[in-house]
Image (tube, rainbow, N blue to C red):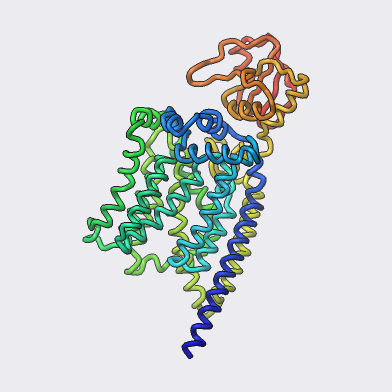
Length: 494
């Protein structure tokens, strides 16, 4: 009998490993299907700035001490610099080489949910959660971005896992694990500190109030601010100056709407599915956790009175906590539905049904991302979660550069770039396509273009007012050469 049971356990383990492998393959296929086109898109302003200003520094020290603005995601920038140098002989300086790290971090995030969180969430809830996130619009944006957001997401998710292990066992190795992930996360994006507030609140929901100040809880709470101080102390002056820059959205309410709408649209199938477990939130043994989870979801409201309001993408590192909370609800909902007499769906049948729903929803939301952007963001700020301008086919600096080279027989005149045209994108793609970077002229915080060169080109964006441009530079004649959608190329006569 014992041998039969042992053989059955081994068989079940093999089946589970096979199913997890198939699940990983499905995630990879969906991830590539929905994100592949994004991997080959042109660089937008922040991405090109990251490459041209930070990764070109000769060493780690020079990258670290270049923190005049918070665009430098230091840990990510250092990784990116050496990643590109490693693969340069094979791939050269092309967009795919720069985008691959975030794609790898994105896949590693899905694998982390499937492995590190599987025992806490259950096999199928973990898979469904990973699938839903992989099909979301923000995942396609940040798993292809030449920025540190996907890396920070992964680090916060791992830190969350480490915090729970430390909370449960008190072992030193998990304290070291937690310290390392926390230091790397805040060293990538300092605003990820809000995610660690979420982790502390989550653990408070699991703990009796009289145990809030035990060594384990205190350790988990104090490590993140200490990590932030330790990492940025040598550059504290630059850090304070960069954090005090007045960048963001004019409307706090619009920013908040976008923050919450981005998450709701991304995880909508699971949010609706979780309604099956809604009553469970208010039973006595869950009410404390429910209260603290609610506070975690309300954390962005801290910034409601800040002007300008933070960019919605600054809260992306908080998403791992939100997603795990939703995943825990999915676990309860799966249990409830599988035991309901009127439904009687096995966990496997339920998972297959949800998988079909999520795949269909993911394809539909991708097909309607422009409409979602218009309905929710409506041009009130930079869209961070649905269909930002740089994800659209109309944003193509490399196409414009090729057209300029053809128009001028590879001898272009000086070209003025408006700030909203994403000038660093043209500098990056211009260099990769063989143009001298000195032909470009654009305004920046340190220098304003006072006068244009005669018989030059100008590239404006659809956000610019050509009449203001004409008035500012006393342009005699401005001829539209071609409208590229987001950009317009003009010939200027003074």
